[in-house]
Length: 239
Image (cartoon, rainbow, N blue to C red):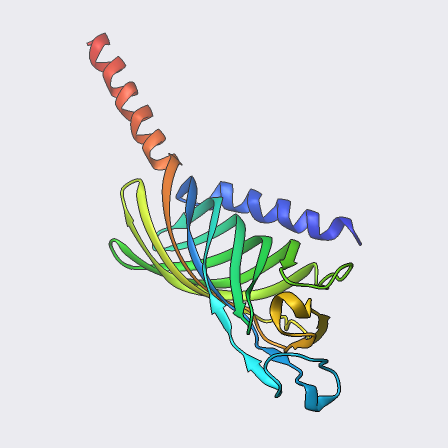
């Protein structure tokens, strides 16, 4: 059973290599804004907060910060349709502005989108598809000594966007929505540094807006054109 997914992947790439009219391989990089959930601060009246600031229960919104990402992609083109698998190394950044200090949330993950697209009119294409994410690091500043934050190692989302391509250079704008919820988690913060003692990171679905630029470093249609030109030049010399 474990070999079946690998077999399907090999079958997919074999089919794509044989029947695609054009294959592109490239590198990409860009920026993202990531949406996270709220932080619920328990005040003194709740009985959970002890000598905290503010005194009342308070909800803090997550503040967006600019994250980065870079990766590689392959595009299998069939006339106006294309399949575009990618591997992206992503850094997400957010913050909670608490009473005493701002605490930063940083996430490192690998995103693997498998995008299905259609070229509406040159140079504009639309696409959508699933995204498989693997989180390998998540860090929240301000936690009390010995405390750690728990997180799901894997998750799934869906992505949709617009692609504009000019020869070897392309611009990509997309929206990514996490289908796997991040569950509510209770945390213990350092009261002296943050003003908060006990808090809940409330449940949410991750969201990203991503802007990136890519470069096609290999294009099979260009290779075919060069081969045709070289063949024609040899035939001309024989004449």
